Amino acid sequence: MHATSQFKPGIAIHGGAGTLLRSAISGEEEQLYLAALNQILRAAEHILSLGGSAVDAVTEAVRLLEDCPLFNAGKGAVFTSAATHEMDAAIMDGAALKAGAVACVSRIRNPVLAARAVMDNSPHVLLVGGGAELFAQAQGLQMADADYFYTEARYAQWKNAQQASSILLDHDAAARQEKSPVEPVIPVMPAPIDPDNKFGTVGAVALDRHGNLAAATSTGGMTNKMQGRVGDTPMLGAGCYANNRTAAMSATGTGESFMRSLALHDISAQMEYTLCSLQQAAENVVMHKLPLYEGRGGVIAIDALGNISMPFNTEGMYRGFMHVGAQPVCLIYG
Figure 1 (cartoon, one colour):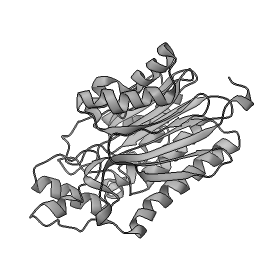
Figure 2 (tube, rainbow, N blue to C red):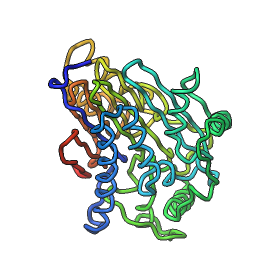
Figure 3 (cartoon, rainbow, N blue to C red):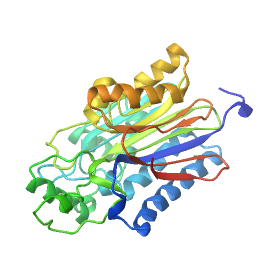
Figure 4 (cartoon, rainbow, N blue to C red):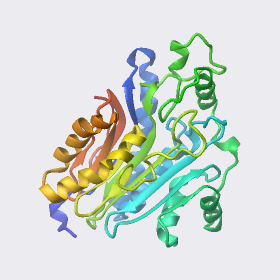
């Protein structure tokens, strides 16, 4: 617990990182992404401004990101190799290191709400597949048929990936239509970040007025991924982590690399054991250590004083931050 004058409550969110494709988009298309980030930031900041918890703020931010088809989570989730959806989510409360996660779920409308229910209402940390869905139903969470998660853009991206016999990392595959002689079945809306080189996870981190930190992460995974593949998103210390002694963090990128390096726990450990700043630790991991594991992507983080860091080793990352009472800042490019 901190004196209120010593720290700045705030929220940061992300919608994935990757290679920029500025030539393929209009200013209007770019504004769609920035407007979505802005709206979601304001909704989460409103919770914090009323004295709400960091856990509630990140839950709401990620729920809204899941409901936005621009991003690869919930409604915008990508297709597996079997033309299904398998989604993962996690949430962590930095006060007591409580956490909840779900993986390989296909019928839960908002996986982050299921992760929150696992944390709050079960003795477990991670539930998967059918068991996670039964638990979510028992908790009264809204379920959805496959048609809810279907979007024409994601289906086109899956068809492109199938035709190219490839797996496209963590978002859409729209740029494939420019690089492949095979025409997509359905045209795909251009995006500011090249969808062929895009790591599509969504996440949020927050510090509340009580001095508590929280993080949440959600994803649809990789376009054309094998059924049963689980990435870093529901893995604590890899894709999602919060500890009041250090920081709250959410990752987006090559999931296997974040898992192998326990990237977020590494940042926290550096802060705790060497007393370096959040910015120093996050930059060290993202810019220097992750590349040793062929890791590409980025991290959003907020520490116990409200300092925010958002390093990425790709050309861009959908991201935004807002301290309570201040104006939101939303960015895509480096």
